Length: 141
Image 1: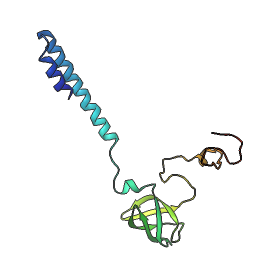
Image 2: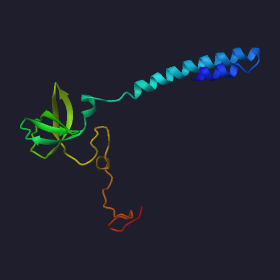
Image 3: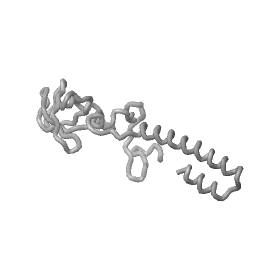
Image 4: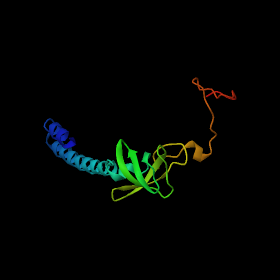
């Protein structure tokens, strides 16, 4: 895109500047392509098994040690060494073939394994009403 703009500008400038504008357009275009390729590699969408790692699943049939779970509306075969009963929430840790390896959910928080919840950082957990006041009335946000 930058090169096209440089060509259009070069049509309206005198001779010595045409060469400079076209050269700058070529350099900018090469830089734009390099930058775009880096972004494309960094933001590659996660699909399939790698997208399910760290997600929460609901147990449909008892996991003692093999059963079934619902993940994103899909029914998957799952295995858990800790075991889980119907209705329990588990977290997907890895995938072996077409079987998910899960473990029971031990704490409240995000379903993503890379998120850090406030409870793990040691922040006090307080109850807040709708107006943003702490229920014990110590301070207002």
